[in-house]
Length: 287
Image (cartoon, rainbow, N blue to C red; front, side, top):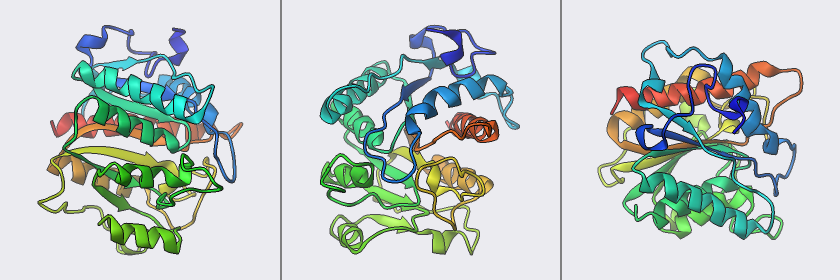
């Protein structure tokens, strides 16, 4: 593996996958984007930018738990085949007792990660999602594996779901929320009131996979995404919401999806890398 494709490779050797907690899985998948493109370039841009990170994140040193960057998932071929490869990579990480950290790529990737968790025998978990979109359409443009349908695939697998920051959805998705008992606090609740903490109900699973679509954050923070929507979460609000979940539940993995680099605007690439590293830090401090 080229050293420049390692997360925080400026500070860390690749090391032993058995002795590292965080296993970064780059997934340069871009097949069903419906507006702006570029998510296939997201993982490498984030890995490159991570070389500029400080190991001290302001509160702790997350890399002390170890960061292992895996080979990028092969995203050629049929959509279903790619999903299986993502699932296999995730299952392999979980089988080592480690934490998958997937970097996309479009949000369809999360469906493969969730399948991998289930394939690894983890069935008692829920998903918490930050996103501008509900992603609960049964299919979009005729494709059930669309990025706009990924959370429908998740709830079809009977995985409980809690959505945060959504502000773009259709009537079909409202009905799906009701049918599958999807929990949510949308952007019009969270943002105007500057809500930085949620309380998960007692019956929500004790293990959580957290998926963060960067378009869940406001375009003033992340314009570098294919489907930006105004009125999103801020930087500190996003981290605080994630930490509120980490305090209440065991985070078993997370991802960052839908980042599309903008040529000449490397600040956003660095922000994406720093966001991932700060989430690692929150996990470290709440273990």
